[in-house]
Length: 137
Image 1: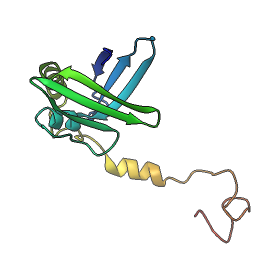
Image 2: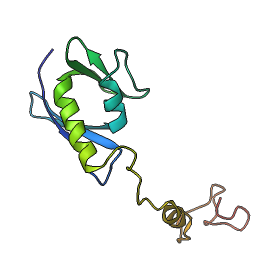
Image 3: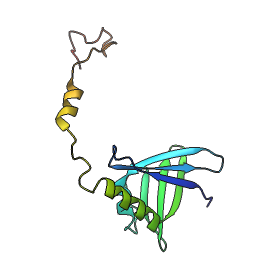
Image 4: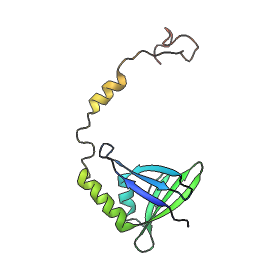
């Protein structure tokens, strides 16, 4: 395996996610964002956890494997469980588990989604949008 430098980051404004920025040997930077709970679950699992493009599980003695998959290919990354656990511990000090959505106003989000805004363009039938036959469908 080729070593890569990685930097884990956490933004309390996006409390359910952690990001990992990888610096490859060619100087290229790639950032992946994954669920904080996915990484936490992977710390204690001998089998891969995750159903999408990111899978996480224990590897060997004290290791953590993070498998990333995209259309361009896949990569297996190894990290020390202790380092990742320490990082996650600091994120939970900032935003405790279970409080990630405290203060989230679902009513306001729905109001914004349903707010009427002028729409430019054409209806699926080809008429000016919204057309009288199809409304705002």
